[in-house]
Length: 178
Ligand code: 5GP
Image 1: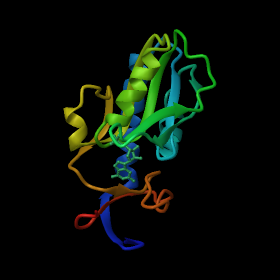
Image 2: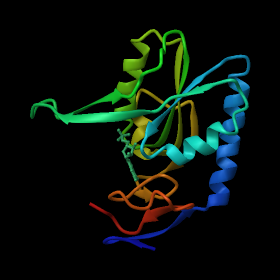
Image 3: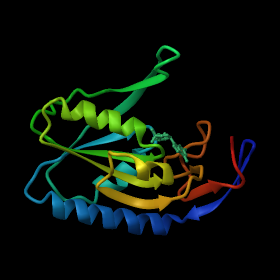
Image 4: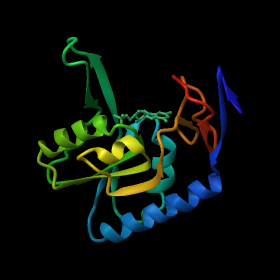
């Protein structure tokens, strides 16, 4: 399968993803029984995962969407990211951040820090995929679908240069995209 200049091969089939999403939903349902969590899918990549996951969590819950806004800081601080779109009151809420993929984990750790500073009751992360570099980070997801090596993946919401989000399966790049 080819997207633009890159060759991809199948990594996780839609059926395997569906099984994993069901297992994650069951874990979340068990852990949050009696609570009313607020799901915060982080756009854009998590929209398909979030839709499949949240429909299987049979709890009274709310859903709101957030997005990383990035801007160039000074040369010394590099690229800074923050959250936009948070219109809900999150005070005293049990937040579940829904992420498609954690690479370095840097983006999400900043977001978790930000949310904890806003008086939330709890903040946990569910990520469909965790890449190897993210395993070393201090902020860890409570729920992880797949642990993978440092591969570039597309499909099931994840894009390559804006394309491939609509693929039902997940593919990995052949060779090393740079
Ligand atoms: P982090 O701060 O964890 O390094 O960055 C995570 C974000 O980078 C993800 O939400 C996603 O947008 C992007 N990303 C990281 N790895 C991949 C990948 O393999 N494929 C795609 N499509 N996006 C990725």
